Length: 370
Image (cartoon, rainbow, N blue to C red):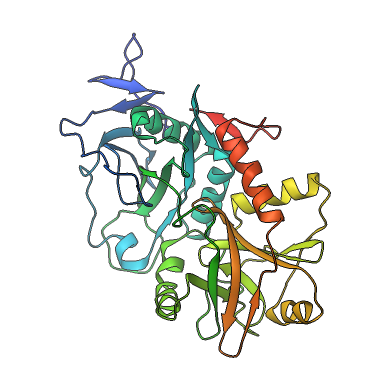
């Protein structure tokens, strides 16, 4: 039985209650308080419902169901808590005058499957992943804020080991879940220009590790470096390679781009950085616009030499949460590099926002209607 299958009656409803896109729904009897004020922040609020589905190695996926938020359990001895056997994704639903729209859910589903395979977890089929997201967003659609100020419904699919055991091995039982959170701009202000600290002591990932996997351990290990950067007055960390501590990897939790002169450069996908969906979207747009693009290693040394030669430098980060974030400065113990102006990043932000909102045509098939 696939995750999306449920037992349906003749009128299309699940036995015992409502069904949305084939997923049984138990509505909450105690709705959660709605956010008040003008700022939602990011991830501070959860909607009324979550989607859950269990997987057992012997029997496969059980039917998905949508239940009130807070009604699920967590096993203390689970592989997720004891050994970090968990992965997640992050995508958004956007409200237009006509519909709710998902941006590239198929790409997120495929990346979710890659993460699952790396941690010996069961893969969620792409269509099942998309169906689960659509069903939950339909149930809690009225939580989605307007796009003004970066408003969206943030979607967090998660897969975690739920088997209770103490022993280092692949788990036999897992739970797939989806959470929703109404959000606005990730940073304070749409035009926030970031100051990053180039981290030379700690590293985010090394070749052969799980740097390309969206798993919680990657984020947990980044917290101390980020805390220290903020204590120095910086917004986040610029991660460097694990060998020479010179080549750019990621900007906090974002992929990083730099423009030197007329050429845009972003680090290649070689196993240490996440294959960002927004990153890929930007590369597609840039190439369509005829902007010279290179996916190759780029170092602080190269940026410093370009700055000394008087070349234009523009830096920005990309990700689902922040979309496009201009980087004004990267600094370290004995130096810094500053962007000389922003030309490409604002154009990319406008183009992607235009697709999110329906203002511009989706010529790539990136939008899926809820």
